[in-house]
Length: 252
Ligand SMILES: [Mg+2]
Ligand SMILES: [Zn+2]
Image (cartoon, rainbow, N blue to C red; front, side, top):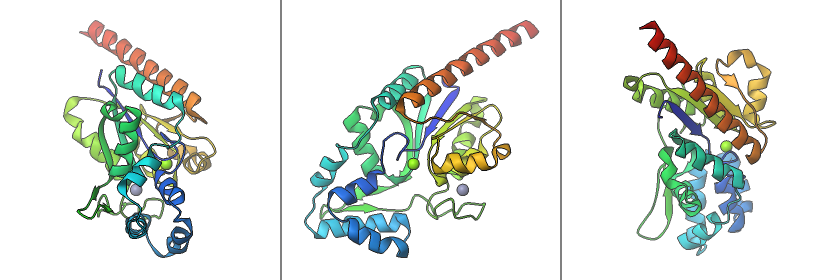
């Protein structure tokens, strides 16, 4: 069953916090971060913060130890494992970075549940410093400030859909919380679902003009509701797809 593609944002959707803020705060660099924040894009600021932490003697192992403490709701872990076991194609789109996301997913035993992770590339250089690069140079075609300059999740969603065009119709479920998750929400189609986190920025944007969203909107508040909603949507799609298979057979 690979007709269902579930696309997750990472920070405050899969995990309960922002993993890059978590590392900066836990390793004691919050003041410098706040000082630089108004002057740099998020992506280049995080690369700079990794340089600062490295110069202060903080190692990759220190960062990994913090990442292993990332808070996550146990039902989110269960929901991801269940959706994967049901045969859904699970993907992540995130403006965090590859090293942080992969470290957390491996620690949780979730890495093999995901087909692909679209995020800012990063690697540990020969000095042991993490370097973070922008995901892409394509700016959001809508030209607004809701998508950061290095990542338009709407473009990524279109790219995922285009890469599957030959495999027949896919049904998308998109889960997110932040302003960057609004652009992909607008790209979803009538048979898709968007799961905005209730009272978070993407939910507020969607609620202001719900008629702009073609997908069916299903809000959630916490991990328990995420699990219940996601699994029931997968169930609904199974039933609809099976029913349409039977109808097609009668038609022939
Ligand atoms: Mg988020
Ligand atoms: Zn965009």
